[in-house]
Structures are given as C-alpha cells and as structure tokens.
Length: 168
Image 1 (cartoon, rainbow, N blue to C red):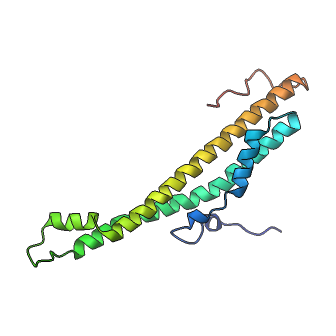
Image 2 (cartoon, rainbow, N blue to C red; image 1 turned 45 degrees about the vertical axis):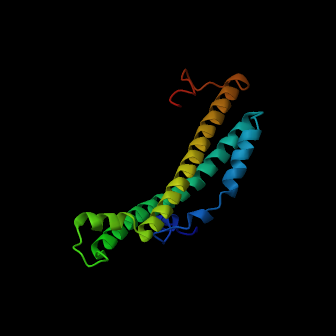
Image 3 (spheres, rainbow, N blue to C red; image 1 turned 135 degrees about the vertical axis):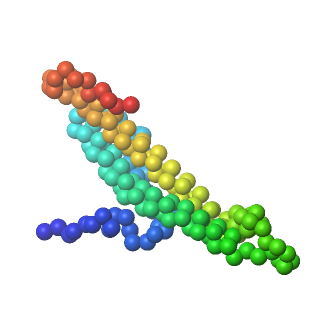
C-alpha cells in the first residue's frame, strides 16, 4: 500500500515558503537535455515527452507554493501599511492628518522590507511559469514528432486529424 499524499503536503505547511531554496536541478537537467538532443526515433521522442511532463509536474508543486507565498506577502504588505498608518503620530506633537498617516504607511521601512520579499516572490513565480510553459510546449513538440514517426515509419494513422491541431 502506498503512502497517502494530501494536498496540504504539496502546498506545504508554512504561509511563506523559502522559495529561494526550491531545487531546480532536475528541471535544469531536463531543459538542457531537451535543448541539446533531437528525437532520433519513436521511443526517444516518447521518452522526451515523458521527461518534459516530469519537469512540468515538479514545477506545478513549486508554483502552488509560490502562489500561496505571493498571496500571503500581499496581505502582509497591506496589513503592515495599515498598522504603521494607524500608529503614526506627528513627531512635533502637531495635528496628525490623514495624508501624513497615509505617507507614513507607504514610506515605512517595515513595508519596504515586505514589498522587497513580495517582489522577489513574484519574480520567482514568473521564472517558474516560463519554465513550465517551455516544458509543456516541448512535450507537445515531441508528441507531434512521435505522431509523425508513427505515420511515416510504422504506417500507423490514427485517422485524419492533424496531431498539431490545437497546439499554439
């Protein structure tokens, strides 16, 4: 009997993940291999399809964690701004205006610190999304090659549909 894997296991238990520690070694190996190797036969094309999907699967797990982290950090930016704004008092004892409180919240070092973390997380998310797109497109590319090899080498035809239809 296999071990139970719950969605919470994939998402992780922390609200803010250590996304800089995500291990992309296998992803980079797959991408390098896909870049440097041409499919020489049907079995090889199918193997490259599988490797593409394996890389995409790993990235999906990381993307789920980074999306959770981005959402958490966005809420932290807002709550930190609000907290600083509410606590702000004019330093000279003069009347504290709404604009002064707003500016205090927007220029606070605490807010800036969280915004920098958020920017890093959003950058990491973009990297993961682009690598995911490359892997999925590679999978479809090798799928098309495999379909062409089946038709030309094996004389196999799955009908009149074009294997490349629907892939952009």
